[in-house]
Image (cartoon, rainbow, N blue to C red):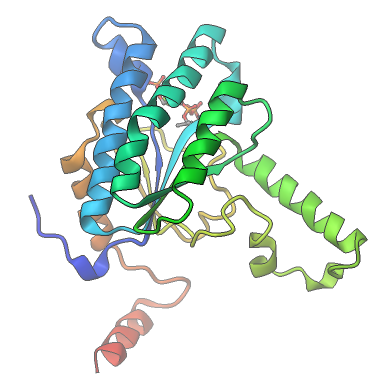
Length: 251
Ligand code: IPE
Ligand code: IPE
Ligand code: MG
């Protein structure tokens, strides 16, 4: 395993956890078996973030589009989320992890909503890692919702339309308390964003691996972080400018 530079770790990692169904099918099992095993990868990645002192981890757990799956699978996913929240809460508290929900609350089954809210409330004061679960989340829906909220504030006289800037708009998103992701990981080998954090990904580094989510554990995560450390983040500038800024900072 390669050496990670602790100075160059991403502040915010976001993950599209994909490939549970294929993982299960390869073992001649039901798709739900893959989701259950995927929960262990979540635990591993959360623990690794704490160990490395990464401040923000965002996981895509259920998209707006996932409602179109067979009813039994959707039900199993809600059940899994409820069990996961219940079983992980003590460790989250112990490790000082704050839990957040990104997405619409309505439509989520009441019992899951209650469990989720209780976990969010119980971890509210913690700050070593912010773990955000994107559940019943869609990037386009989030942007449309933010636009509607801003329009309401304009109607109420709190803002003028011309006040709107990217910074102000960001405050109407579910992610208002989070910095933009530095690194986005997608497991399962698909080269698409599937309606995840469309606004926030503007300058994220993308890492796509064929590894299926249930097989994505600590070592695979470290490999992704190592790959991130080799990237040069230019934010529109030239490579020379970036190198210059670095040497200036070093002086
Ligand atoms: C990701 O795995 C989990 C969710 C989307 C909830 P999938 O269930 O999409 O697995 P594949 O892509 O079918 O293998
Ligand atoms: C993306 O995975 C959504 C989540 C990981 C929750 P999907 O499996 O739903 O994505 P598509 O349908 O292949 O784009
Ligand atoms: Mg999938």
